[in-house]
Length: 569
Image (cartoon, rainbow, N blue to C red):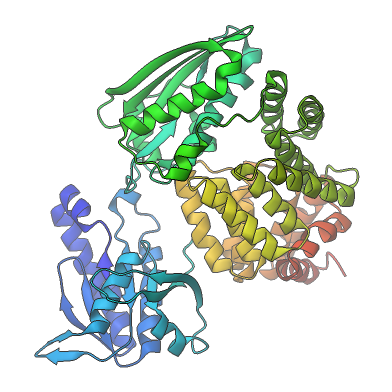
């Protein structure tokens, strides 16, 4: 069992860190170890070697310790959190005095190194002996090559059920990731025409997407950086608030068929410039400019690209600039999240496809608009729109199998059709192509809780929220549902309450909140929440069509909560 980032914590506050670790060991770790009949073999500065006579006790003790650490860290800033990694193996050991040695110890130590902060990794041998004996979820992470271990070891991750991080982005400072990190602020529109905002925003988002495809980078999501749009910002403060080492800012001026883009890469600690460039090009060269910006950033941050990542440079989504412009306009309308704006987006994307019938992003975006209209209750023909969305998403993947967005939308279409295995496969493909995509992680989480793995979904959502500290309101749907399926009704209600504050006009959150209140016996509040959902046009027929078909288990829990308050029969 090892404390993550111990050297960093000691460097920031040696005395305080030592005191915190001693307190946690005495008040949290040792009581759980003793309760599960284990012993501390030795303490190694930032870690412990533990021995148990029972494998079940070892794993249950580890899970309880990690769950306790979630509570311990709940109100602690990320930069000061004490987080643990734990590795577990079973095998014979050689006892020498008070110490132990052997392959089991070595494997456990290496598995600990594989574990994410706050998680547990166990060996295949341990998994085979404990599966079915504990009410704990395990995730197969495949064969692992471990340092100084002759043969590959099958490993499993224990799903602890990490909670969401509602205060991410609100803390004074987030800990830096363990790889080069960057946030791209909204490029300033220098065209002298406010109507061109959609274009500068679109360029910014395209650069974020390009960077997000690079596995060695950590890239903050668009939704979080656009929280600073139109504001005078201090780059050092932004760097601290978003937890990144570098910030990119710039401007866009579009006049006729010409575009001028400036970009500056800034060190988030000193505020000094690492790289700056200005591009004056024809509009037709816009994709080449985006590639050049990405390549210069990669070079400045000394990031090594994989062969596949290098091959992605030079790809052109469309040669029809009018179609590209329509897609950017449609994206701007979609982000307004109103019924009329969605209809406008749908019209714009339909025009884009007519101009370029091979434009994969236009198909993907239109599929997303249609599906989201359906979820909001704004669709005139929900069943037809679902099939239309599915056909559009499938066509997008056929046109460009290397477009992560296309796979994400096809995953959503499969999910709404109830094809969970296919949804999982497409969501994983999307994330493999764009490993910094917070929405991609959120999409995988939705599939995981729909497949009956809510604790795993919460862990994925926690990672998504770190990439997207100012996360959009719909993340709360996945968090709330995960807690609902875990029967954490208080936590689910609290999450949906936050959702109704963030987006008061989103009818499903009011409906789900009514169900949570029903489970909690808060029947008067359930009636009020249900009435708000109905007043927004969310009927039970729509709910049944959307949720029950996609996710029967959570759908049944919602219905049970509504029945408890007499809202449905």
